Length: 111
Image 1 (cartoon, rainbow, N blue to C red):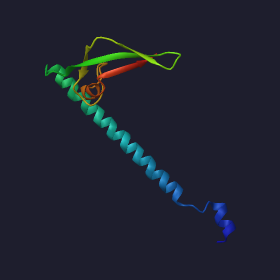
Image 2: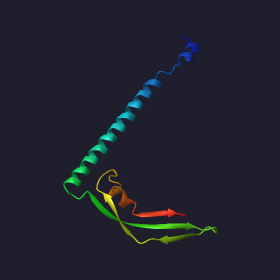
Image 3: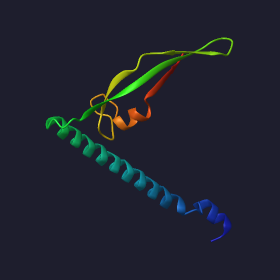
């Protein structure tokens, strides 16, 4: 095989092999994520049916940051409120997970 023939056939045989491994890894990751979500949802539904406190609450402080034309910012605070959260890894029933809400207890809105 000459250099000209090698360049015509592509010469790089690792491309399809590497693509196949990447695709299989992606599909395996998505499958594991789906299994984790399904298991988490099943545990949530069990806790809901057995009345084992699937919901919690976290105090959240919200404030607005209003930018003025002169470059200064005005901060307007809302009173703290209790938000409902779910004791799970993923959000369920329209509520965020408690572990996420605890880490984001201060919520800012830029205006």
